[in-house]
Length: 91
Image 1 (cartoon, rainbow, N blue to C red):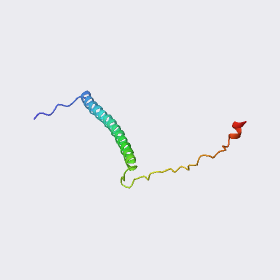
Image 2 (cartoon, rainbow, N blue to C red):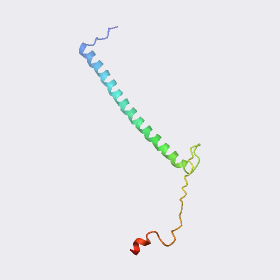
Image 3 (tube, helix red, strand yellow):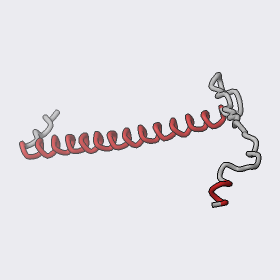
Image 4 (spheres, rainbow, N blue to C red):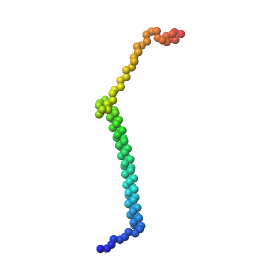
């Protein structure tokens, strides 16, 4: 059996450089995909939380139901004549 041919220093450097460049490109792509996925998860979580908050106002959503806020206005009867500004109008 013949011994395999040894690579020259230049061939070894080219092979090693190619492997490192490929690994670097793969790492950059993985980082970009990770950032994109994190953003999509954040947006989905925000949308889900908003949906649950909106639904909890009208239905029971796992104990998150908000009580309705009812405002009661203190209704005053209209003033009886003479009006407080009648003197200003008469002048």
